[in-house]
Image (cartoon, rainbow, N blue to C red; front, side, top):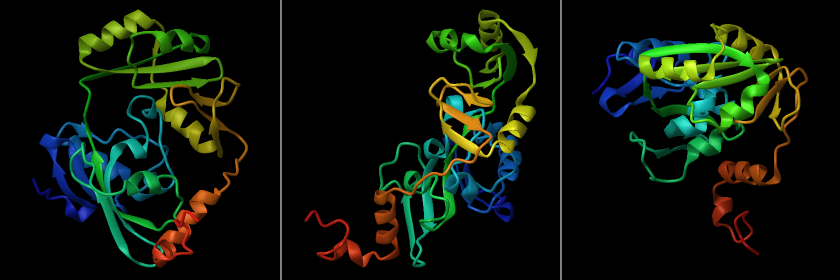
Length: 255
C-alpha cells in the first residue's frame, strides 16, 4: 500500500507486512504519529525527537532496546550517499532479506564518516494492548534475567530497577504479579536522564547513573572517546575511493 503521508517523509507503508520506507530526514515523533493510526509503532524510543537518519548514524536508542534492539536490528534496508556522491542501497522491504551487503549495520554508529542515510526500510511492531511498569530493587536483576518473564524495558537508576511489561492485558497482569513491585511511570524521566549523560560504555556490573543491563549499556557523566579503528578507516577510504578496491595495491589486496 502506498501511503498518503509522503509529505512528512513516509514513502511507503505496508501495514500487513509491518514494514515501511521513510526518508532519512523524517522525525521519529512524526513517524510514530502516522503509524499510530494503524495501531503500529517503530520500537525505538531515544531521548528527544531525532530524525531517522540521526538514529542510525549515531546509533541512538532508548529503554525499548532491552527487547527490540537498536537501529541495526530494526533497519531492514537503506539507501545511502557515499562520500563521493555515489548512491548505494542494500536490503529491501521484507524482514527476511539477504540482498546485497548490509549497509544498515555498517552505517549504524558511523556518525556520518561513511556518508549520509537518505532512505530507510524499517521493521515495525504492533502497538501493545496493555503496558505497565513496576519499580523494584536493582539487586533483583539477576533473578529477572534468569526468569521466564519477558519485559520490554529494564533500566536501573541508582538502587531502583524499572521494568516495563507489554502485551495482552492478562499476560501483562500475570507478569507484573509474578515480579511484584510498585506501579510507576518513569520513562520520560529516564530518557531525560539519559539525555543529560554524555558518556556511553559497556556495562560489566559496575555502578553507573543509568544502566540498561539487558544490552549491557551504561550511561555515565563523562564523555567517552570512541577511537576510530584502523579497519573502519580502511572502509572509509574504500568508500571514498572505490577504485582502490580493484587496485593491486588496494586495501582488500591480501598481499
